[in-house]
Length: 441
Ligand code: HEM
Image 1 (spheres, helix red, strand yellow):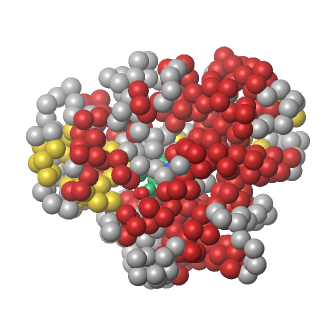
Image 2 (cartoon, rainbow, N blue to C red):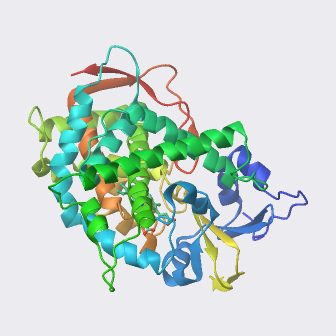
Image 3 (cartoon, helix red, strand yellow):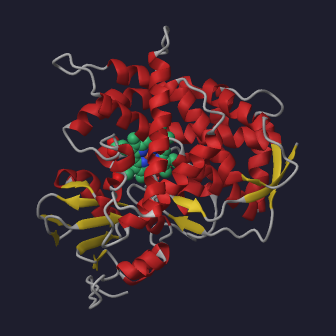
């Protein structure tokens, strides 16, 4: 460990090249060499990587008003515009107020049966005579769940195409976020053309969701209803643009992340036979051959802990950032206006300062009521403060349901050598998918 907190570099890109080559390794190296914070340059941007829960809390809570979302998310504006992930106050405050009631722990209980029905329908359609890519399957199921629960629409067909477009957008957006000189989006390069075409295709799906609702006589009182009918103090409804941005945000943020959680969950079970056995035993004891229902969920405690433990080792949002809007001092360090701070759940969750035997996959470590409550700002798969993930309870409930339904129906084992690398795009995806041999139980 050294006390030096500044990494000097004569390279014009600073540490960007190293980071681009292997972002997780770069972060791990910094965390192993520095105690609290380390400052470096990504080309012309000054970046501070925060390594203690106290500093992270300052940014997300105590001094959150001095920060705004950083470029990482701004590139995504092409897709999600000024939706809840990317907007800043006062738009963000107003929109969060409209959307929040649909994600309270009490409200999400209402989604249980729709989650079960959508996921069951999809799983029953799977053929298991050759290895299946579980990450594709999980994208399909979570997409079906989010569109049904939030927008009362079925997109069971066409989900594979949506997956291809999503992956393409994330790949190119990530590349652009990590470039110093990125070509303007209007340039006629094949990759940019594909990028724009995929964004257009996803926007078309969202338009279809909205139009489908507008053409219906009777309405379900779901999130889409609230977005369509909300009025501001002057009685004005949301602009069409804002509506599309919010629907797109929920559509994208609401399935990709949970799908990655589930993919890593099954991957981790495969490598940890005892945990896998415990999960199967718990699902068999609690649910057995019965139809899964809301009354079973509280008893699936170990399975929930295994999901939380997966979020620790493979947090889908492995890094996020903020930019200062004024000079600010955190923990005695000056961060100048316009500089960036990086927070990495991946690094915090794997730190031996905060977790005993951090590389062990040990669900029992969450043997209590709330994982986040026990490790404030060291365990932060959903972020924290006023920008904490709005879908955190929704995601855990959904993941528990899908995990239980899957375990109830299938046995699985890895095909091939069983090794899958992390692909740290904006979310932490499994590189090349996760192929499993699956059989019906
Ligand atoms: C395992 C699944 C999920 C993970 C790990 C996750 C993680 C996160 C994280 C870390 C943030 C904060 C980013 C920041 O502070 O810059 C966030 C924000 C957000 N998430 Fe999630 N998320 C998940 C599922 C969901 C779901 C299911 C939804 C919607 C149904 C959702 C919607 C959002 C939205 C709208 C925001 C922005 C909130 C705001 O700024 O007010 N997420 N998520």
